[in-house]
Length: 337
Ligand code: SF4
Image (cartoon, rainbow, N blue to C red; front, top):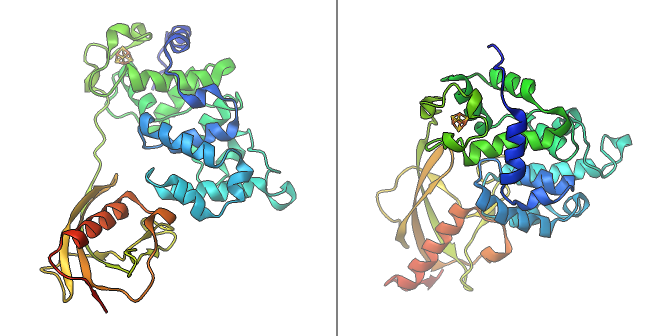
């Protein structure tokens, strides 16, 4: 791929200086707060990311505060943000960073180099480039979906490879303002060069754009395969009305979070001493889940947990809500077993 000459970098930076959204993580130079924003914003809308960023910064204002917390507390604070493996890895990262360098850690300070950041749990090339440039002014170019779209349109490319996009980003990086440059390109993609309605007339880099006459033709949309999954669950409650839930095994779906046991497949009807409570639909990035919820009409002799005290996924919260409503609506009398 030949380099596109004439990308008006100064114009884009000026546009960013004048038009950037006032996001809270742009008002801090604390690398930890910046890292939290970058991890939270992966596959999350900015408005939602902002809610969770405030929550996390308040709960864990320093790396040490997270390292000193049990992972369950981190998962509880992360509740609702999705992709819970990110929270578990962040916790592992905080504990590693707090270790002395003699034990392979970083003496309590987030490292500034791209390579050292990349070695930490949960940090991929994007996050390492974003944090090293934004928090530490290191000259590393980010590549994300927004930047890929801007690049594809600038060059009229249908399917630019990851290597081509990285190479384009590297060639055009403004070294003395690397953090601002990376953010300016991403901001342009998020607010002007948007997927469906790009505003080319007000784009600061329109003069170098080959795709501006037919911008939505580039790049081809990525096809995401979504797997349909059907599950069922029977929720039991204890005599205090708390659901019987367990902590899921690490590594699996919703690992480390709490919920009732889910079973794959369909069920034709409720089992003995059960009533059908309703069906819950839930979408993840690669899965469309349909969960048929049943409730046991028997009161469990075991002790349940108050959902407010443990970390639960949004899906599990919906399941418990559906089951709880049914207990009040059901014509069945719930019996002590
Ligand atoms: S001119 Fe249009 S298509 Fe080209 S980068 Fe700007 S907004 Fe995107």
